[in-house]
Image (cartoon, rainbow, N blue to C red; front, side, top):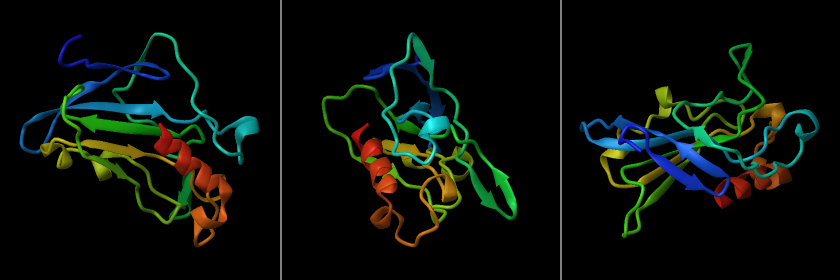
Length: 166
């Protein structure tokens, strides 16, 4: 393993991340596009999320995944296969516990994503924390247009529970 290609083992398999630079020119480790649920396509569309399966070999976790389907400005974009998270930290192992920040992107459950161009980790990675960002199903593909999505929608609750369990 080189500093440029950090490896980490999670329950589903081995991830290869990369090293990036924070705003204060410090280095941090980036693991992007980690599946936290099976792709919600085919028979899993409109169903509660299922845990991600294991993979063989080393999974590339150096690039962002697609954002979830949504409609903005009369345009549809995104992919259904979008239930991925990103983890950023300065060090893989540490004897002391670190604060963990889980960032849930905005967008009223109908648009948005965890894209680094908007919610990049460079500022927060000046501190010794663990940052987790993720995509979640939007609009009609997941959470519906209800005002209190998580309260009214059991699928919304299931997605949140599965995500934090990871």
